[in-house]
Length: 174
Image (cartoon, rainbow, N blue to C red; front, side, top):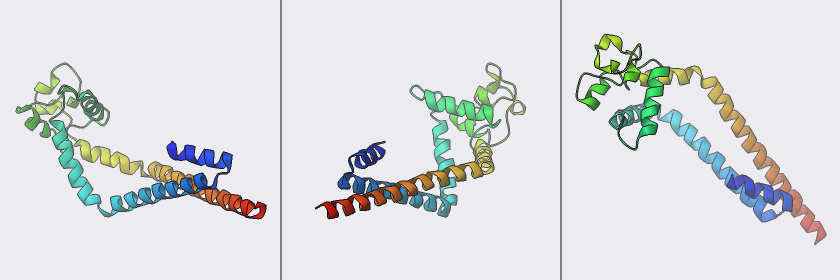
């Protein structure tokens, strides 16, 4: 928002310094996004391992005071994606130190259904299920990313064009 504000004021006032500042900041954001995208694809395997490890650590915060958002997120994911745990339902055994899972893992939700036998729980791993869903929707994510990049490149182009026009006008008028 701040970068956009600088660009708007620079364009309205035809202020060279603000236009150049907008261009440089937008270019930095664009390059940072491109770098993150390249690193993401280059280190996908490492990211997978770290994500699974961190998600398993995060399971221990489930249901604890001050972690309502995390608890709700796990409950929603497990219910909507019909999965349980990061790699499977046994991930929850370490959390509870018992053979039980949250109620959101149950095939048919009922109070304390997570205490019943494993046959009444979702078997699919949440990490792989969500990852598959993301891969199935990769086209939408890619189109969104390309549209964002296009808008940024247009912003860079218009900012530099206006900067050059203002510079040319100042040179002729001086």
